[in-house]
Amino acid sequence: MSKNMWIIDTDAGVDDAQALVLALKCQEYHNFEVVAITSVAGNVPLPQVNKNIGEILRVCNKTHIPYYSGSAKPLINDLTDCASIHGVDGLNNYWSNPSRGAEDIPEPQSKHAVQAIIDIANEHPGQVSIATIGPLTNLALAVCLDPALPTKFKRVLVMGAAVHGKGNITVSAEFNIWCDPEASHIVFERFPLLEIVPWETCIDREHKFTSEFLNSYTHGATPQGNFVREITTIVGGESHVFFCDPITICIAIDESIAKEYSLRKGFVELNGGYTRGMTVVNWGCSDMKEINEGGDANLKIVEKLDLEKIMALFLHSIS
Image (cartoon, rainbow, N blue to C red; front, side, top):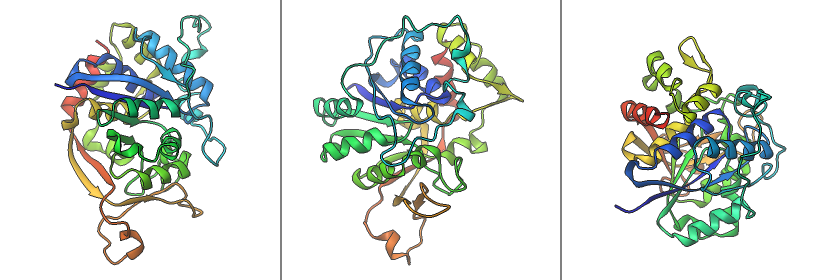
C-alpha cells in the first residue's frame, strides 16, 4: 500500500489541537503519514499558533515532524480571532498554568509555510494531500505562486463552509471561510475539486457523541490523553467546542468515514452586508445562470459520517 501522505494546515485552536493529536497518534492507520504541519493565523495570532503546534508535537513525542510558520493575517482584512471560544491562547487557557514552560518546544522551520506547501507538492506530485483546518490564506498564496499546484495534490480536504447558510461567525458564514474570504474565493476558483467537511455536517445531531464516549475520550491515561483533557471542557455531557477538525482528520485517515457526499458547484461571496464570507452552493436552482456558469461541480461535500469509526480513532489517539 502506498503512503497516505498529508500536510495539515492549522490555526491551532482547541479542535485543531485535538485533530493534531489524532493525526500524530494514528499514523499506522491506512498508512497515514503527517509529512508537515503549516501554521496560519485564525483562532489566535500566528505566534501563539506556532507555540501551540510546538507543544502538541512535544506532547505527542513527534518533534521530528517539521512545522512551518505561515501567514500572519488574511490577505486583505485584519485578523479577527476566536479567543472568546478557544481562550486567549487558543487552547482553553492551557498556558495559564505558570509551571508550563516553553523550553522543550521545537521551533518552526526557517522556510515559510507557503513555500513549504509548494515544495512538498512538487517533491511528491500526485502523492501528497493537504487538509486545511483553519483559514485558507496559505493555500491561496501557494496557488497564486504556483498555478499548477491543484494538479499536484492527491486530495484537498477543507474543514469549512456553511453550505446551507447556517453560519457560526455570522448568520450565514462559517469561520474558516469568513476569516479570509478573498483567500477562500481564490481556493474555490483555482482548485477543480475540494472535499468539504462543512460546519452543518459536524454539528448534525445524527453525529452527536454520547456523554459516555466523551468521558472516555477526556480520560486517557497518556501524555496526549492528559493534554486533551486539559484543553477540552465538558459541560452537561457536551464539549464546549464542536469536533469539526478532528472529524476532518478522521476522513483524511480513512476516506470511508465520509459515508455520503454531494457534488455541487460552490462560490464564496466577497460582498454583501450580511453575506460576506458566505459559501454559496447551487443545490439545484437551474434557472440561476450566474450560479450555474462555470460548469462542473467543484465541491465534494461530506453529508453523512461513520460515527463508530470516528470514535474508534478518537479513542486510539489518547490510548
